[in-house]
Image (cartoon, rainbow, N blue to C red; front, side, top):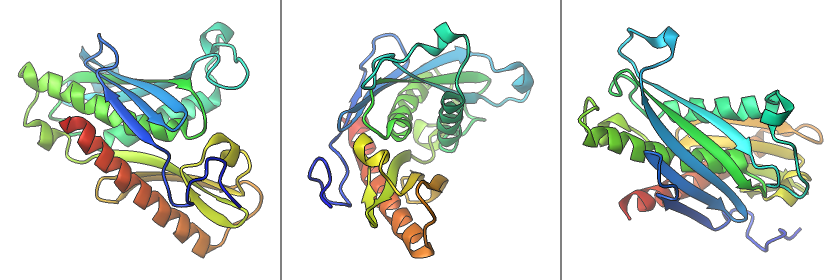
Length: 242
């Protein structure tokens, strides 16, 4: 079965990482996975949460949100509803966990970095795009701290690995990489893979949406996810050296 945009099963959508997209944050990146666009900003503040004080460790956390018309129909802002949804909490925590895997929190000192990931346009893979873009924004924020002599070590030691993420799934029995929305809603198996730049796993989230899946299918999806994350890691490196 042909993909909606004509890609090969193992092909990413066009990926763009635009640094410095927003003026005020210490790091900002507009990340585009095809038609999915997410603005990732990294804000540095002195101090850490109360439970972290006196530890000598910094903190990295994330918040995720979607603009009301990021999708085909308008959704009310969660702030207007007065309650953050479970999906939003889940994705925010996933992004935070993923990015904490790549930074030496001790080297940050008692400083906090908040990653805000706002979906401007959604066409599948918003959480994976957010993680991929947030890594670059975090790298720029850590570089900003280094420039102000507020970092215990060189940037390349503090950011000791890269992190990227991509979606994979099975449609009509075929494993596919980087699902767009039309594929995501029809997938028999849907999975998000978070990897380091060397192909090690940070987190894997997967479920059989329309039944169960076999071990060989799982292996095929993980192989696709690792391959996609390594391509994204290369795009991150190019963005950070541009």
